[in-house]
Length: 465
Image 1 (cartoon, rainbow, N blue to C red):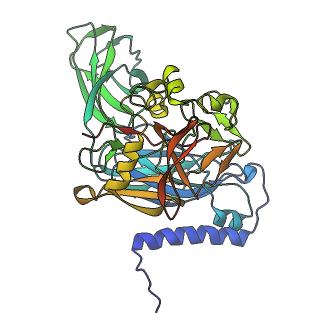
Image 2 (image 1 turned 90 degrees about the vertical axis):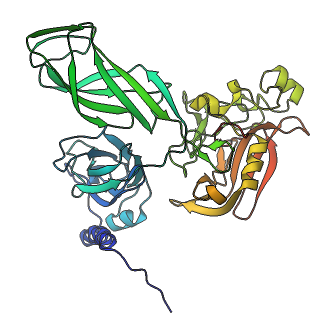
């Protein structure tokens, strides 16, 4: 007997939107490109979650039907859509959607499916726009959507870091210069304060903002603070009358950062939720030869550096082979490894790309991952890999390692079939190889591979106690 899943009204609405859009496309047939056409699009879903809002849909421009369009997403904290939350989020409609291509008779990738971090819990109003490839107008995709964000569970110790802010005035009621301004009462304005920590934006951060000046008689009232992941919008006004001369005015930003990571067993290290170079768990990220910190991505015709676009081959000669066929004493004298037998910070891909306290896992830590977690082959957003879930009190915590394959010569081999991840530990029984964590759909085990092979890296922080 067949079993049918009961759909909610929201699910039915989403399906109807999708089916109507595709039915219209089929009725029109393969449209001939015409000058001046605006993008065709559909917002399939906009849903809130734990610290995130996910938007999915598709868009393409008939004037450039094989091109993946930019998608702009705006979040508002009020139903009138006047208080904007954080910065505009720019996505790329580059997810494969064969149903759209078939319906419209086009090629290319035109879907988008993005989970966007939101720092504050609450109700949000969301507008999504397709950016026309030829400048013919950027229509809103569907109607304004609503989504409810719940508070994300914090499992990381917060660190208090004072950072230098970039002060950019984006909207004012009077003329403003944040380094010097002379204004009659009432002085008021709106500014966007953007900040980074260690040169990189953080997805989970809370900032306290203070407007300060050399004029000790000046005080300010701050209101309507809209907090974004890496920026705040703030309204401010002077609290006394008369002419006001402010010099050396500045914004001081104190940021509390959640470093992140998932602890999967008691006293264990914290595992990053993404590979180095990835922004989502299912993304492959960058590939490294053992001891490399640059990182490379595959273009389909070869590997290029993420730093400067320089090409490389993962082979036993050239730039990828500097640790190949060196025994431990040679690695130690060349400062690749320390006295513990693991890569030094200067040659640790996680430490050099993400900064302290992140680092590459050791052989022992990967072994403990297998011992202390339940593991199962899983698929996340169409990407196969292994999920590792804690036991007992940690059963609600997990990480996902995508089967990202490996780099060999100019090729990316076996993506979706095998997962291969470097440890920071060399292979002691022979020169030129290092230990990697390896899995396929049926098994997980350790192997040693030549140091010139290109593999992804999953960072950890903290040490087992």
